[in-house]
Length: 140
Image: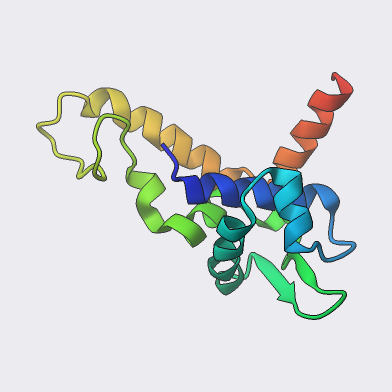
C-alpha cells in the first residue's frame, strides 16, 4: 500500500523521534539502526528537509534531526513529503492510483476503509507511535 520510500522514511522518522531532539544523528548511524540502505536513506532526507520535517547539519558534529517536535509531525505529513498525495488515493486492487470511478464494484467497500486509514494517518503523530512502542516494550 505504501511505497518503499514511504516505509523507509517512516522507519527513519520514528527512530529520530525515539531518540529525541537531544542531538543530530549521523546518516550511517540512522541507516544501521533502521536497517534502511544508507544510499536510499540519503535520498529521502532532501524531501523531508524541504517539507520542514527534518533538519540537517553539515560538518563533524552534524547529522539529521527532527526539525520540530515529534508531536507536531503527523504520519500523513511524512508520507506526503516523500510520496505526495499518492497514499490518499491508494487502492490495493489496482496498480495505478484510484480514480474513484462510481462504476468500480469495490468502491462502496474500499472507500470507507481508505477514509479511516487516511484519518488515522492525519491524526497520528510520530510521538504517539514512539509512545506506543514504549508501551509494547514495557508490556503494558
